Image: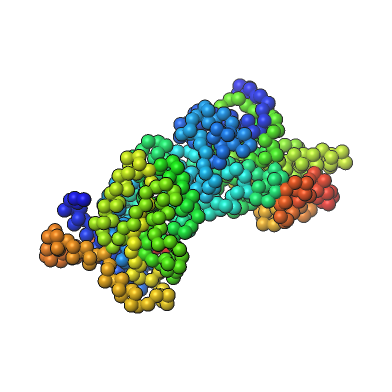
Length: 307
Length: 326
């Protein structure tokens, strides 16, 4: 698949930005800049960035709840991301997540999949060309509502793409203990929809399957299921002692993480020079510092939250 | 001077059917779906004829997937539709509790949505036994974002459902299975709507107030007639909607009578009666000259069949409760 050079570069910028936002949040979390539980997403950004590069701004989207790679991928401004994470009141007239088709409510896993299937139903019944992209994890894949939702989407040929970002862990439970099968994507067969496994650390491979699936949905070809195999590089949340996995395992996984891997690829492909990379590094850092400074000066909303 | 509204006697079932048909004709955004509601016309024949009139894009069947029925209705409402969905039995709410209790209730507020027009139709009661006959209104009123509607007459069934469909908030509409065949006068005028939060005084009386709703109203009225023969005049108030609640109507009546009995079919513990009593104690304590009595279902497993009338309160239970106050 030919991917335009600008798109390749934009995906790198978003990957890098998502990773750095993660790092910044980790740092802010230890200073008490916001309240709530922090679920970071390092390692599993590639699929979200690829989906974001294919989706339209108005497509309905439920991003991965872990990290902010979904939001970055969809194009949500960094300032808005930090204001949200830091529980800040944005100035009147600011864009909201909803302007990007994202509704942030719903924290019981597997229970929002029927709702996203409903936006796809609404599109189909009204002849709208807005598709829905519904991301969830390997843990959530085992919830009953996900089954009900996928079955309905299949019988009614709804314009939706289900994406399982399989990061190998549901809190402490490894995928091979929560699931007797090898691939979640195999379940698609049981619903009568296409299912595909992709290397979730390879952003270009992710982009290719995302393009196929979203095109199919938009053109009336019905739903499909993508499983992106990746790895959760940090604990379930900050403070997790991670007694359930070895340091060696995590160390090995870091060697395959998507940001560095994609950077090497772009250098090899001649898309990027080392100078370009340094420049983008500085730009994304500045973007984040600006966003943190901006958000810090906004009034704080009551209460904390789950991030 | 308002023109006289033409009324015709139809069943509670047809009143619901007419409300659906009229609203679907009026507003192309209204859709109806659930298990067997299409060609089959619904488990209780409530949607009979609607599939033929409106077609499969407006009236359609779902697989047995209560969770996805509620969830997709929320999503579809976000895209501009006004879904009316049916759970075949209100008792099935247990299979999709998260969707009703958290998502349907809170989704509008969480996401700063301007509206979330979903109506969930819940056929309740009916003596079909466990998981099929539950009256789950106490669970629903505990959910902050839901409006809860319990019509007792064909007129109310139609007028309240039309209001529910036009409401921009999610509404749990509890229709009582035992009332489906009951006939009563229903206006044929399409614009006869019944506002939420307006109780109806079904019988006036000076001595005791009985508040109730849904099918229990008829047991309260039977009790009131018998009590009248013994010189006790009971005022029977039909709440019609639990959320919003017409507190004013209850307080006004209790101020007059000084005595209150609350009667409902659903189970007593953690039930509607305790909630209603707490409101009267808080806002109308000085009106009371006797304790508040609650006549409600026993805290037992519903088995269905001939034992249901034992676990469900009857008119003599209401009479006994009233008499204990004198």
